[in-house]
Figure 1 (spheres, rainbow, N blue to C red):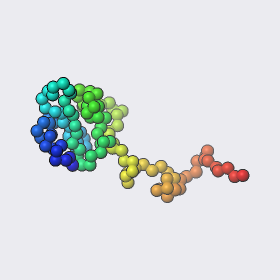
Figure 2: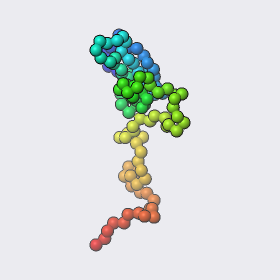
Figure 3: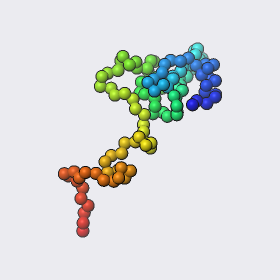
Figure 4: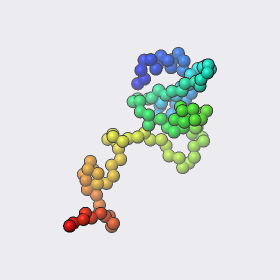
Length: 116
């Protein structure tokens, strides 16, 4: 949840540009600020997590593009955005990881420790 100051600034000076599939809302500063670019910001839907911003909106937030990539411009080979789950219960754990029991199937070229 955004802080009170951010919500007040958004209500007074923000113009909604769009939302992403996760429900994050993206804003740009209304009017033409003198001598600088208008501010762009996001209000997250839930926990403020930077990896929750898809690439097309990240590029827009950082003034790399003038408009975010629309769904119609996406290619069929582009995968949908996923947040970074490192450090959470949804994190990827390869076979043999200690948190998955530490056991995995042997491979043909498996490592064998040196024995003197």
